[in-house]
Image 1 (tube, rainbow, N blue to C red):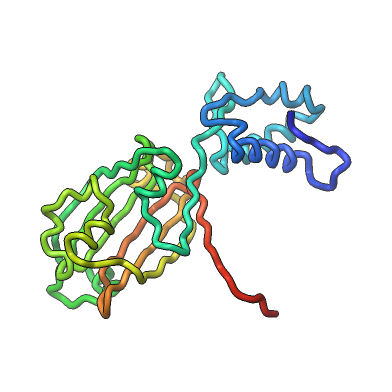
Image 2 (image 1 turned 180 degrees about the vertical axis):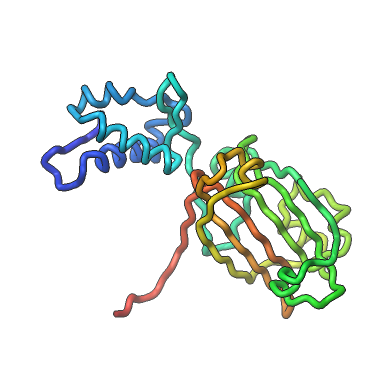
Amino acid sequence: MYEINKKSDIPLYQQLIHEIKKRVDTKVLKENDKLPSESEICRTYNLSRTIVRMAMNILEQEGYIYKLRGKGSYVSSPKIYQVRSEFSKFYDDMTTIGKVPVSKILYIKVKEPNELIRTKMNLFEGDLVFKLIWIRYGSQEPLIYETIYFNYSMVQGIENMDITTKKLYDILADEFGIKVVQGKEMFYPCKITGSEAKYLMLDEGELGMKVERTVSYGSKILEYTQSTVRGDRFVYMTNFTGSLKK
C-alpha cells in the first residue's frame, strides 16, 4: 500500500511518485514487476485519473517504469549509480549491480586526428591517435556510445590486443606501465540522435548525457573520450568534503 496524505502540502502526484520510487529503490518492487493499473490506483486511493497519469508519465520519463501498450506499466531495470569523483570503471559498475559487462567494437584504427582532437590532446600535425568507437552493454542492454582517442606514441601496439575482455585501464597498467590517476570530466545534457540513438536503441530526441573525459599522464594527454550516456539509466554522484562558506 502506498502512503498518500491528502492533508499534506505536497501535491498528490508527487506523493505517488515518491511512494513508487521508494519501493523500486528498496527493491520491494523488482525489475519487470507489474504495477497496478491506473484505474486500480485511482479507486484504491481515491485519486483522479489526471493525477495518476501525471505521476506515471513522470516515472516513465525518468526511467523508473516502462509501459507496454494494452498490458500496463512495469518496473524498469534498476538505475546505475556511478561515483564520478573517482575514476569510474564500467566493468566494475556493471558487476556491482549484477550485470554482465560487454563491449561491442564499431570502429578501431590508428590514424591522424582532425584539428579538434589535436587541440583537445595538445598534439602536433603528424602525431597519431588510436581511435576506438564501441558500445558498452550491461547484460545485453546498450548503455553507452563511446569514442576514445589515445595518444598512440604512448600505447603503440594496443590495436593488436584484445580490449573487449579486459578492463581498458588494466591493459594500460599491465602492458604499458601507465597507471591512470589524473583527469577531468565535463557533463552536459543532450538529445540523442543519429547513429547514437540507433545503437542505444532509443527514439530520436530522447534525453541523454554527454561526458567528455581528458586524462593526463605526466606532461602529456593520454586520452580524450566522448561518451553519450543513456539519461534514463544512469545517476551520477560526487563526494565532497570541507566547510561551507557564505
